[in-house]
Amino acid sequence: MLFHSQVGMAAYLDLLRLLQDEAVSALRGAPTAVTVKGRIFWYDKYRIGTEMAQKYIGPDSPELRARLGDVPTLRAQADARRVARRRLVRILRAENYGTTDQRSGSLLNAFARTGVFRLGGTLVGTVAFRHYEGELGVVLSFDQLAQTGDLDVASFERLSFAIGDAVETPLVEVFRDLKFDAVPALDQGRTWRWAQSGGEMLVDFLMPAHGAEGIRDLPALGVSAQALRHLDYLLENPIPAVSLYRSGVLIQIPRPERFAIHKLIVAERRKGGSMAGKAAKDRAQAAFLIRALAELRPDELAEAYAEARARGSGWETRITASLKRMPEVAEMLAGV
Image 1 (cartoon, one colour):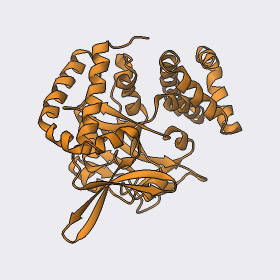
Image 2 (cartoon, helix red, strand yellow):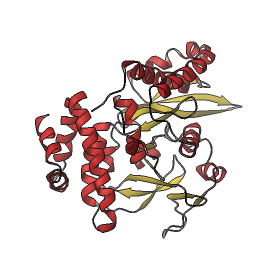
Image 3 (cartoon, rainbow, N blue to C red):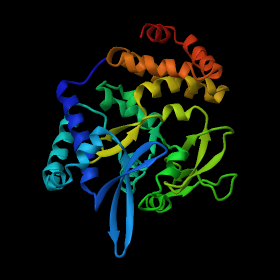
Image 4 (spheres, helix red, strand yellow):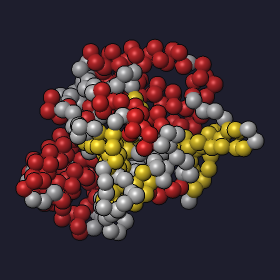
């Protein structure tokens, strides 16, 4: 397992911090805490004419509260922050951190600007995996950094309803500007997949299934989504991350330990010859992250592993079946 230098790791963390500062410095009014079903969420409340409006900021955390208490200072640092971000991106490129290609980067940047990640959208799949290079400081190989033609965004249905906010620019317009078309679905009027002209890239919207898998709505994002089992586990407590496009894009990805264990489950769901390649890729990503986490964050890995196995016999059966194909990984998990 190869790791990036301390210089690169420090530069990544600094860039992440600056992007989070930037997001809070754009507040228009007064930050206000709202409690929904026992959880605290923060909103930016401001006046438009004679009406009061509000914009969702995010779930409560000590880090967010600290930033909200220092908004005037963060606003005053805007110019210095832009200069620092460009410098840090140059350092990360010199340290051979993987950058995001123009096609994916322009889409992620558009999603960030309109509020997809702020409103709970979380990247999953291979695009998310590539961003663990920064989170964990691990060196990814050329094959692991290879760009994929698919980009998956997942979110909780209940969060989408609860926050009472929506993307600033409808995603239909975002996709149109980037030359994407809606892919016709069996459930007419509910679009959950978009394809770029020429078939270069597919974007899928996903959500956890509570009961039958099917198509449901994500009001905050203004799209529909394919409901899939086991996604609730993956999306629990996602983390911010940086995509190295231009001077950095603030995105959201699953916690690496949950991503790794979830991949073990997903691999066993892929049945049939056409799915064999994807299942092998799932297990390879799981193995890589488990090796890294066993060294860097064994307690978090052990907790995620135990939680997944405790969710029921179906979960444990799939995890065990995957690990039978991966004896070295099974031994690592047994030792954490």
